[in-house]
Length: 65
Image (cartoon, rainbow, N blue to C red):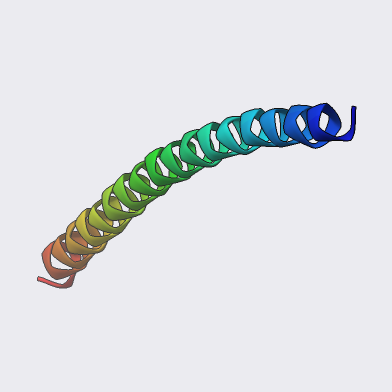
């Protein structure tokens, strides 16, 4: 009976480990997707801020003339 007990425990633990590895992969994939989205949003925000600054500078030049 003892041999069957450790064997069943080992089988269950192996299944657990496989599931945990799958979960880790999913979490990493999700994290990477969110990271890419965040970087894209930051780049867009930086570009828009730069464009706004250029427009303001252009308007100030026009007003100063």
